[in-house]
Image (spheres, rainbow, N blue to C red):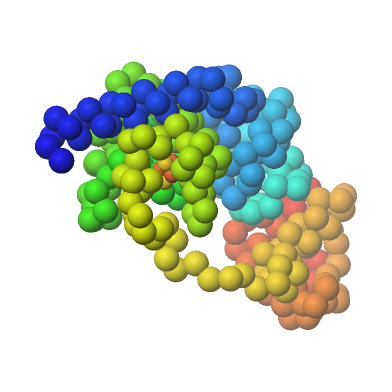
Length: 294
Ligand code: SF4
């Protein structure tokens, strides 16, 4: 394919995706704002949480904590309680620590550079780029596993090396449309470009997609080659940590942990308590624990 043909194919693909998004994109609450703090919160919430559920939680969280200063002034216990039902509670503590840094080092305003964003606790390169693209409309590609799969299948050559991927993806961001492009690719990934059974016949990229034009079903970039089936959830440490934090959210102060929980032994419980204390979520006194700031 000559460079001009490739550029034309990409231009057609960009227009198709943006047109489809304008008419069919998901109407999520956090898509009605470009406030950098609101976008940062939405991206942290959306990690590991289904988009519609994250949007509901975002509305509640923003009502309670509309600014970084509001989170920075709250105790860890208050923020962890506001995180109820979302899982991965470390995100709540990291978000509070990020808010404190935003207040202390950036005058209470979310910074607008990649280096400053990734220096915030809990903010990785994907989240930082999503904030830059969505809140600041900077021409950077936020590559989570879904967006990586869409552009890898549709728009990039199959032999792209991982180290080249970010620069190539940045080059695909349409001028002045970084926010809509990011949202649109997220939606295409969720609605059509599924890992195992992509619905190419209904996808807005079908006429320009390299993968759709390729007969063998496995063509395209690997999306998660190391994935393994997970163990039964109730036997996992994550489940145990969630139950411990649920109990502490409901407790006004110290709570004793003298027994096992579910299939987890007392030793398992105490190992998780120690870990939660190291991570700054709880205070530990022998077998007693409470949320920090309770
Ligand atoms: S046409 Fe198929 S493979 Fe290509 S982006 Fe759409 S769903 Fe994915």
